[in-house]
Image (cartoon, rainbow, N blue to C red; front, top):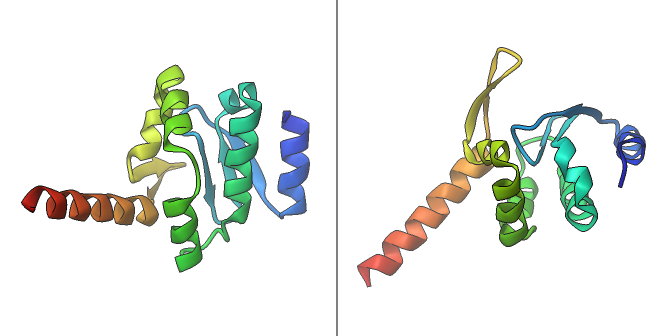
Length: 123
């Protein structure tokens, strides 16, 4: 997928696109943030963007569910190791355009993983 196609799909979904090396991709309200290096990996790019287009841009149970069950952690980690700045995506709190952004879904996922590990290790 190329930039023109991404911009066209974003426009169809009433989204603005910004490019950033400091993540893989993210949807914040009507803004779609995309790592330009994602364009080098067609299948991962298509899967990632399909995932982002499913989000509502709001904090809903459906958005949390999408983040918890979709996507390949292996592909994500491979991408991050090839483009280390993308590891910043796993930090749930960031400052973007002088505003504090909190990724509640990531925080919830960390608590779920932590709870599962705690439960498993206590057995």
